Image 1 (cartoon, each protein chain N blue to C red):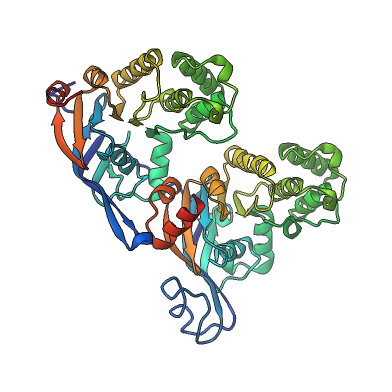
Image 2 (cartoon, rainbow over the protein chains, first blue to last red):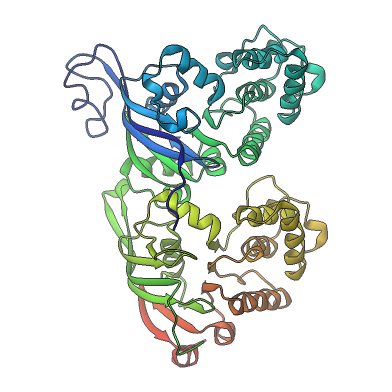
Length: 281
Length: 251
């Protein structure tokens, strides 16, 4: 047995508290108390003590109801939120020795541009809707230091072709695109600089079933082709079942169960996981 | 070979599974307990017994779709020391499933919106075959399983139960795993297709794969199995040589 492959992404003790925080916050919240709100100081413990590893080519799901903290955890990894506690290491960043959460701001931003890509449920968060599809992708290339116009255009067309965005729409403003097409542009942008880690926050929620299926298929194929380490947050078990091998279940900001995806679906252990699975089937 | 036992690929001891149903007051449902058996390389062990005896649950507990409640499931990988699948970290179990442990359920497990040939070829790629070679091998195994060539580009969800069963099998047979778990591999097949599948399983075992399979048909068990484990009400009631064990059971 070779043991687990070296992780592309390793997260330890990730926590995020909104509000002033106090010494009682952690003990005063969580699944046993069925609350995220600290009764002592009024802070919200959105997530706490979240840890996991994901290897290249592997995907991990995070499931839980709205407010369970799954999106907050993802946003901390994407660099959108400053975590209160924890560490995160990405293999492509200084060989996995540098904690993303303590990097200087400029370096942290570069990680978001080159190493860790995030696809948002709402394309308006990941794209500028009032510039063109091509402009969005080229911005991301430029942010990583690309300067040669011809090469950028070539990479842009390659990305749009791979994500099945029609080439004739490259110079159209994203606001004129359908929901599914916006997600494809977002994926093209996020993958522009070949990140090793892809974070997906409800990537197909809100899309028509047939459009969602096409986007899911694209993500699945890209993950295999590019050997991406993927973390996908979703409340939709069909998405989780299709994209992931392992899952974390979060409730009231804490991980209450982790397991293989088929095990979670067929033999959930925690009372909350059992409720969640029963509701989805 | 009967009698001379080499190091087993799978050594199951005291395996038990019960479910705690928190939604209905923490009621505990016992699936099975006290299950022991071994499967050596090149050996086929059949799980037999009536519906509800716990056979599928045993297979799922070995594969870790169910978390065992008690017992050990020692698996000897191609290299290195045996590992206890019951206690192994999830990521390691997932890796072994990709490379060394195959599972074919009674039901379709294929990914949605992917053609039959593609589904089967990808299983080979995951186990290290070069993509072009995997497609050729996938075509060979689908032909050997007598799956109509016209269906190779369609989605498996559109196929009949028997056709789906052969797609599942083809994925497992393409690049034979070290251990193959089969849940009623011929239940939905007509006699001719059943024969084709049984002879492929037999060839696989002859090639050294360890197979644990649920089989209902006594003829098939007698022909293929080195050992049979007979279950009733979640317990092993008899185990050993198929001819001897089956002699005491109504067919």
